[in-house]
Length: 172
Image 1 (cartoon, helix red, strand yellow):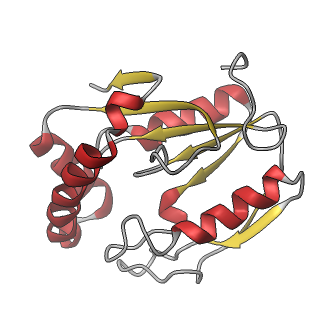
Image 2 (cartoon, rainbow, N blue to C red; image 1 turned 180 degrees about the horizontal axis):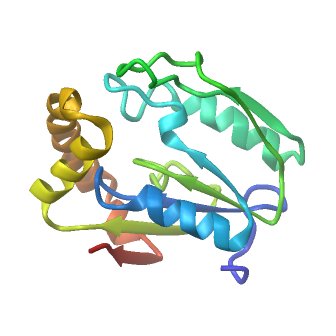
């Protein structure tokens, strides 16, 4: 990982992408702990109604600050009430450092030219992934996850995320 050139100023940005319920958050958290690095999640910005688009500029502003060698502060989307409230969650500060992990759906998108390394975490069984996500976030979120999975299938096909990944990790 340290062999990959930094593309975010002097920082290497490692994207950990993949479908919901595949295990990417757990993988990314474990990697961040092992490497002693900070982690940004696309869930800090996304909402059910906006999986990939309107919020990307907010994340890009954070990345711009880091690329310039500055700290970046943002407010997370608050998911505590079972529905997203963008910019209403806790304030988070990220500092430029050797490596930062960007975890979540669409983190390794083609348009993200700042990544040094793209990892795609997958588990081929969509039904199992759905049940994992529902178990994690609650039965009341099932319909959201069903729609989300439909969106993911289309997104990954068009974006070719898995095919462009430097590494593909298959979760159990």
